[in-house]
Amino acid sequence: MNDKHMNLRPALLCALLAAAFLAGCGKGQDTGADARPATDPNLVVVNAEMARNFKVAPLAMQMVSTERDLPGRIEANEQLVTRIGASVTGRVTEVFAEVGARVKAGQELARVSSPELTNAQLAWLRAHSATNQAQRAVERAQLLIQADVIGTAELQRREAELSIARAELRAATDQLMLLGVSGAYVDRLRDKGQLSPYAGINATRSGVVIERKVSQGQVAQPGDPLFTIADLSKVWVVGALPEQDAASVQMGQRVEIKVSALGQRQFRGRVVFVSDTISPDTRTLMVRTEVDNADRALKPQMLATLRIIGVARQQLAVPEAAVVRDNDRDHVYVQVAAGQYRLTPVELAPASNGLRPLLKGPAEGTALVVDGAFHLNNERKRAELE
Image (tube, rainbow, N blue to C red):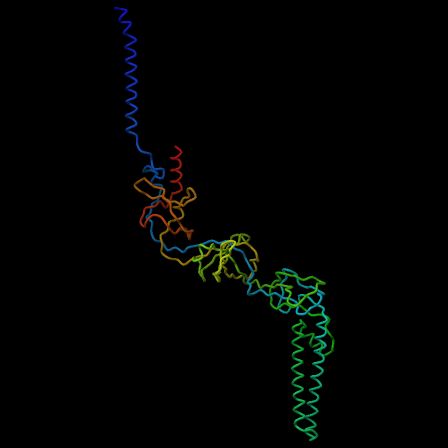
C-alpha cells in the first residue's frame, strides 16, 4: 500500500500543475477582452480643481484691424534729391563740399576752369559793347531828327539795331549763367571788363551732400553728376511685400515704423506708393511711405520694420494668450465637456492689438480656453510622457 501511495504522488502533482497552467491562460484571455481603447492624444482631462485655473470664453466677432510687418530701409526722397554737374567742359580746380555737408541753395560746391567759359565772357563783352553803341546811335538819331537832318526811317533802323543788340546781350548773359557764372561776376565783367577764370558748380537746393563724384584736377563734362544733394526733412521708408499679399495693402493705409538703431522710437506715416510690378528676383513688390524727419534722426540706408495697419472690421478673432504652437502650427484648446479640452489646429492672421483674426478653425460660439492655454498644453505633454 505504501508503494502505491508513493506512486500516486507524482501523478497528482502533475495534474495540479496542469490545472494551474490552464487557469492562468484563461485569466489572460479574459483581461484582453476587457481592455479599453487607446486615449485621444489631443484630449486633455483635468480634475475640477485644476479646471478652475483655465478661463473659457465663446469664440466671438471682434473689431480687428489687420497688421502686417514688412522688412524695409530708409531712403532719400527722390522728389527732394538733386544731382548737380558741371555746366561747362573743363578741369576742376577746387572742391569745397564733402559728403555729409549741409549746403544752401546757391552755395558754391566746386570750381571749373574752361576755355569755353573764357569765350562766353568775350562774347558777352562784345554784345555789351554793341548794345552801348546801338544805344548811342539811337540817341544821336533822335537829336538829328529834331534838327531835321535825317528822316524817320533812319531812326527806326537804328532802333531796330538796338533791339537786336539788347537781345544778343540777354542771350550772352543767359549763357554765362548756364556756365555757372554768378550775377556778381557778370556785374564785375560789365563794370571792369575783368574775366572770371573759372565757372562755379553751385547747389540748386538746400540739403545734405549724400554723394560726391569729383576730385581736384578731374576733367568734368556737362551732364556728369558730380554732387548729389538731398533734402532729408522728409524721407521714404521702402518695404518689400510678398506677392501673395499684394491685394492686402492699399494707398493711404497707416504705417508704423520702427528702426532698431534708434531703440524704441516709433515713426508714423501713410502708404504713398504701391508698385504695379513684382521683382523677379525676390518675388516681392515695393511699398513706400513718407515720414517727417525734421530732426534728421533717420539716415538713408538704415534698416527698418514697417507695420501696415489695415481698416478695422468685424471678424472672428482669438486672444493671443489662447494660441499655442505645436508642430509649427497654431492651435487653440476647445472645451468639449467639463474638465475636458481638445487641442484644435487653426489658421490665424498676424496679431493686432492682442487679437489674432481667425482664417480657418472652429465656428462662432465655440468655447475656447482664452487664459491658461500654455499651462494646459504643458499638462498634455506631461500626460504623453507618462
